[in-house]
Image (cartoon, rainbow over all chains, first blue to last red):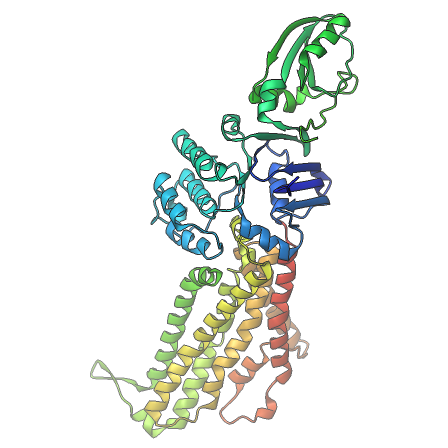
Length: 313
Length: 252
């Protein structure tokens, strides 16, 4: 197996008593487009910051392109090969995008002037206006332009399309697919726009309260994940690692099943349940079922704790 | 490229300080020759030629009194743009994800500011000295020629202190106000101790500047506060080193 582009093992970060990331283990292969999903405060940004050496892990380890971001010499080599778009796209207010490009270019050996010029035109960025005078959307575009023109091996994008209009979002996604995905670059992207994630990602990881609830190929979610709705009095407890989440809604129970949903439904029938529906799940439904507080599994409910369901294993 | 960014951010303060101190130095240098006759102002060189030494002494003392603080001001303004100032506005995420060490970022900024401070201290006073020398036809002005270096030496620890305070407060404004606060409190305490208690606490690293301001020409060099100079040099290195230590461990 080739070396992972991003690898974490038991990565944890606490701010005082507050745990931001707990025991996070990821293995993102080179060329993968990995959607990192979660609610606000789930720990996505902290994870990305740990990968870039902006925050030190409390526990566990991380590797980016096989290098340790905790060591300064290795971090510099990571930063030469990784492009980052932070959530807060704040750049020097006095500088114009053209000046920012010149400034950025000097840092990166693989910088592409052609890509920068093409993107600037495609994203309709006013290159001679001071950054502080640009709209929020244009500021986001400049941040993306700086990252994409780096021609980096790995892109770490923290909500890259926040504040952009749908036309620009489409442009960005097309650029990512045409210029980066097609060239086998690794993209690690967090977003609240699940439609975008579905459009470009081949892997998703769902994080909640710092824990990885689920990690799977998007294709597998489409093909295997099912919502099973059962009814009946006193539905039996079901112990199965395939059940990702279970909720009670009046007389109904909704189960999100990772694989072999029909077999699971059959087991429920044997235990006296009436199966109302076994239907495929979109990413949005899956996400909502997993992260809604009221949907969280509790011991004695269905038994399957919200443990990571990983298809890497 | 980071050096260019430092220059861009300090450019306005640099030009302002340079212009102000040059204007003040020129005004003081030329003032003894400006006279009024029948309601018209004109420049008369005779004062410089007839009384060269008293004129030079007066100009020197006035320049030192007026420009003595410009090194401190330069240190304050330039230091408040150090990389710690980027934490509050959020540009630090951009800066610290460029492939440069935080140490190199800290010292690049320090180096650029040091060059600017040197120009702010040297250019106006040496310009004044050149004009004064030409007007009096006398080039023996050791205090005036020494003054910019003393102003510079006193400014460098302030640059370091502001860099450190900026890292501690994580903002440029916080660093500037913090350093101004430290200086003000020390000076007030020093005055309180000095006057009623008749104690003589050291001027820390500003002793050489005080010596210069209180000196008349041809003061023996034996009275020079070497200890203060050594403290200035040590603190000039210690403050940015402490800032470097803080920033290297900072999380954003």
